[in-house]
Image 1 (tube, helix red, strand yellow):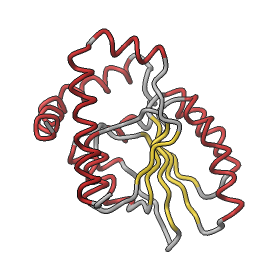
Image 2 (cartoon, helix red, strand yellow):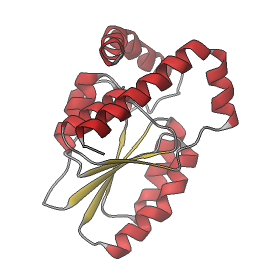
Image 3 (cartoon, one colour):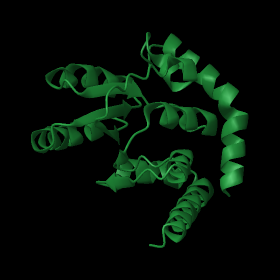
Length: 195
């Protein structure tokens, strides 16, 4: 199942690049930073020093708002932390730029497509010490590559809204296969870690 997902994402990558360019054209992507999602040359890695880096992935506005207090609290307790915050939507990216002005230790980037070579390069460039996924932002290549690199991961506030549930109901076979893939990936990780 994992091989099928990886093969599919690799095959679809050129079409996804075209889709991102189209979305930029219709003003649904950041006009200056949309390439962060699709090209390794635009990851703009700026990690410096020996501080621990915690990567939060919060796709949309609601998820972003939910982790800002957590980041503030972590900053109060540990002063040697840096944060990488990735988002997906234009509105969450705009909000991140506005809200993160109060932090001096947060890097905001757009999350790259969940294609193996992109995620691998992103992780190897940033070298996060921990990855925290917010809500139901579950990406198989991200999970697998983080596991391969022994990077601890957590999912916080994992739930599926009624809106998301209704979307998944439109494609029940795909939803079932995706959730089976997710369970298989998690079981594989648990087995490797002897959990």
